Image (cartoon, rainbow, N blue to C red):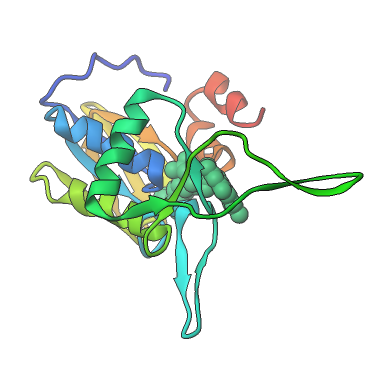
Length: 195
Ligand SMILES: Cc1cc2nc3c(=O)[nH]c(=O)nc-3n(C[C@H](O)[C@H](O)[C@H](O)COP(=O)(O)OP(=O)(O)OC[C@H]3O[C@@H](n4cnc5c(N)ncnc54)[C@H](O)[C@@H]3O)c2cc1C
């Protein structure tokens, strides 16, 4: 952002735009450190590209099907989610196509998926986060604009309602959507959204 921000302290308020897995994980870390956290998502529920749809005959994961672990911090989170029952190991074998057909492919990666569907994970993360007194989630709230205020940033939603001010704003929306919010305030960050 154009305006330099002071270092984050436990008294600070933070708005997070986007309640996909990235926004929820960010919110969890900030709320656990004592910051006051408010998440906004334009969708009816949290989850973003880890959402699922229930149909009478089946449940569909619309985005991510499975994920693997590459670092110790993420493994700790995965262990917590396994214990909570909102994810399970993915029991599918992987195959690789080549000119001689399909071969079983073992890349040594253990994979996990939401249980009973991918959205169970982001639902669990959202519920754990909003169980904290210093965190809240507003769904159905597309943020259309950021406006600097003397004491932070105001968020203006698509209906014109103002939220804030907040000391800090985190944008975890995908880059093209983040671009529209950042473009009036920071050329470098805005350009990075388009690369
Ligand atoms: C079809 C598909 C299959 C995939 N398969 C895999 C896979 O098998 N394994 C894997 O690891 N990854 C997979 N991915 C990628 C994975 O889903 C994403 O990397 C991950 O979910 C991104 O999370 P995120 O929180 O960064 O963003 P998102 O999940 O996109 O969350 C961003 C949130 O921001 C909200 N938002 C955007 N703009 C605004 C606004 N102006 N105001 C308010 N809210 C806003 C959106 O509604 C959304 O909820 C797949 C993705 C897709 C689409």
